Image (cartoon, rainbow over all chains, first blue to last red; front, side, top):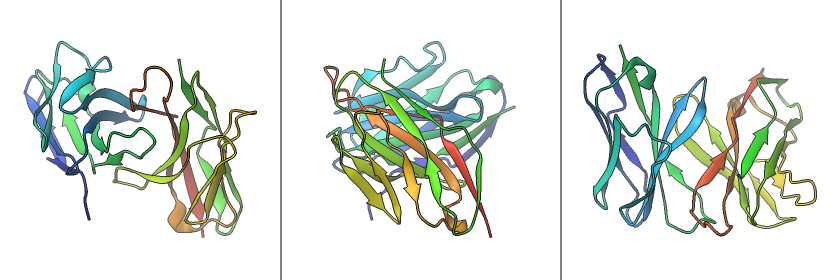
Length: 114
Length: 115
């Protein structure tokens, strides 16, 4: 049963600290998406990749957020420095690259910045 | 740009009641339409989809029909259960010139089903 995995599931940190979230997409999927979910803003697309290349990261605050795919089995989202307003659930999703197909979501990383 | 609008929630129903969650969209191309469901503490998962006008997607007793003339994709279920309590998201994929593979989500509608 192929699934997207995310680590950590929960993270509590203090303002100013670096946070790294990791995602393992489903093997064979060539598109990866990072979303942020909050009560106020709902679900926001932060960045996405196709074949490990970033296609769009316009939804991401550039000064503190960065997203990379070091290899086909790992996507990372980094926040440096973190701020309380970054507190949210961050989801990774992967897809087979055919836009008629679904995106498969991971369980999310719940981030709390104090 | 493309967008999705859902009815505001929460929607509160008694068990076995009929469910409708409205969804309308704006798109320049010919999108595929999706309903995703998010159970508490979990990620989103696909509930059903339709890829062209007049297609009906169905799964787990839920149905939605792609209506191009009214730009709608309303979600329906004839008899809801307590286990259907979740947040439901309507979404479209951009199949126009940009062909990005992105999904554009609505704001989500919370459904609460009481026994």
